[in-house]
Image 1 (cartoon, one colour):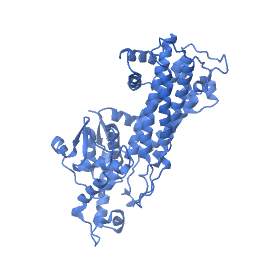
Image 2 (tube, helix red, strand yellow; image 1 turned 90 degrees about the vertical axis):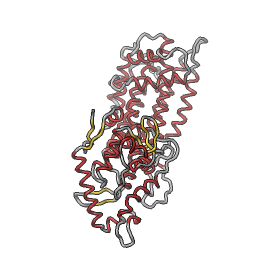
Image 3 (cartoon, helix red, strand yellow; image 1 turned 180 degrees about the horizontal axis):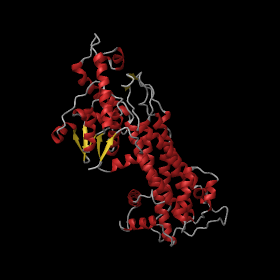
Image 4 (cartoon, helix red, strand yellow; image 1 turned 45 degrees about the horizontal axis):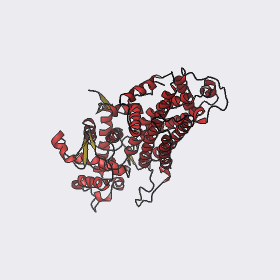
Length: 485
């Protein structure tokens, strides 16, 4: 059995992608155990001292009129706080997003800035290791605290959990796994509620999807370029050296590899022969890649951060209220990625337009090619609407301490839909380009194109365009192109 040890070691996106896709289990490292115990001991001492500072940081309802802590009622009040915020409506989050949320909450606690007990962190690890994913009803209103409240209810046997794609009451966990409901200690409800785990999980999952999507976009663009009959001069190395954005250089290199044996001219025979939908593929695809690189840095920082509020610092004996649980950095990143991906869809639509313009419709053609552009234009309209930044919104709130929202959850959910839409656009482009490829009887086939033809042939000849789009997206998922461009 494989284990990943939770520690202070810096996490990268590839590690997270591997963790959520396999059966690796989690364990606390000795370093994490020391961090958690030291911070909990520090909080325990502050509780015993019952300082004025502690009373300022905790809700007044935890104290009697004489300032003494209501020790017998702490756990009940902690649970009530979580129940109060567990008001999510609409669809539940996919279990893969919840799995990332669990991992990130465990990671955040392991730094030892929250004051929670090891038992609490271990219960979250138990959920993760046994595939017990709390049901989080927060998709339509992706609020961080609402989502984290639902994530936390099963700790004390309330709420619902998803096990092997089936939903059960969390009250059944004791009978199934022997996990007794875990009472919450002081400030553990706050620690569970505070954080950016919803936005970070969604953003990380989105970026994992985009990392797989961009090589596919390059491959599909290369097929369309071959079918259109352009030339390779716009993708030449000297052209990229003159404008050396990293993403542009990478894209041009990938296109040259896909097209090197395709019989296209390496020098232009007609300076007007290549529309920008083809000649500017390196610049536009490259700009999307550079945007992804920027967003990747934001997510890496957030994954490796303590996002509770307040944060407890045992070494300096400080308890500091701040804004580490604000999601604006990720909100801006997801908005930026939305806009970039919409541009990726825009250039794909233009390539489809030129392919349609250069293709004669014969009576014996099975496909009505014109429907392709109408479908794509409808998808693009939705993408343009979704690309309106969520980060510019800040609803009027009546909580003095939470007076401006980052809207990170909303931005991440919107970005997720844009990614799905771009997958559909690229699928439609590949279906069209591959159909014209066959029609023109082009001799050169790249390995992925051969695999695509073989993949589609296994599903039979007659199928609806909807089914063909779904199967092409399945091909994108099954045949990774990241290491083959």
